[in-house]
Length: 332
Image (cartoon, rainbow, N blue to C red):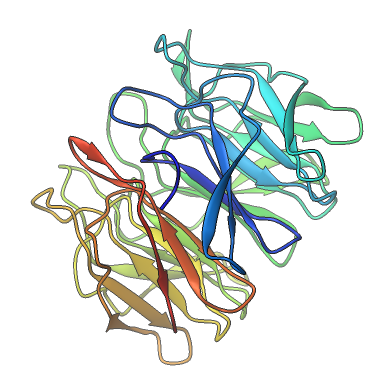
């Protein structure tokens, strides 16, 4: 088990094969603590804490092997613009440049050139925002880039094999869920509309597949109900097409790409808001899901990371009012 119970935590596999788990919420509020999972021993050990408590930060592995952590919400319920970097060699977090805007429930994506694109989220003054900015690890600074076509938070962002970034779904100003999608071009620093999903989605999973397409599955839509449906985005023609559905509706599930190229999707909550222990595996070769073994614990918003040995670490999560410190391994 982890040393601290965590829901909505961030988890990143480091170059060493260890997994950094940080932030999130316990039964009291946001956390600043972080810990490392060592697959060799099967144990978690504390590492340095962040400089601020952060609920829903965006966490990105940099090309250097360090980890960028930005934004989120602190213990005073204030939204953050600050950012910091974790150094695995020293086990410490140090402050880096701040974003131009406070951001909460936003997306961060490492670009091919090593910079990090930050998009949308909830901003203190304007609410849900369409603004975007780019972090340069060399200078440690964020600079503004073109804005998205739509203001959105709780969306997803996926780096495509073309080097562009697919931004899709989320929640719009006024609370409606979005089906629209757009592409960010790093060379131009601009966003352009692309095909829309068949349904509006919020708190869903989106994963790049080895064939270049993007799997989009589950989430809650307009009206709030979680869905079991899934679809595939084709970067060649910019369109979405239906694929097989999961065995259960899921929102706020966790996803991990398996060494086979399949995608494990675990936990979340169903349309009745019941927390799930079940899991599904998507097979890109046939375009369908098969139920996998269930977790030992039902988990809403857990963290999931594929280890170098091919197993998947699933840690933390919540089943309100409880948050979990337990973890488990999925063996494909």
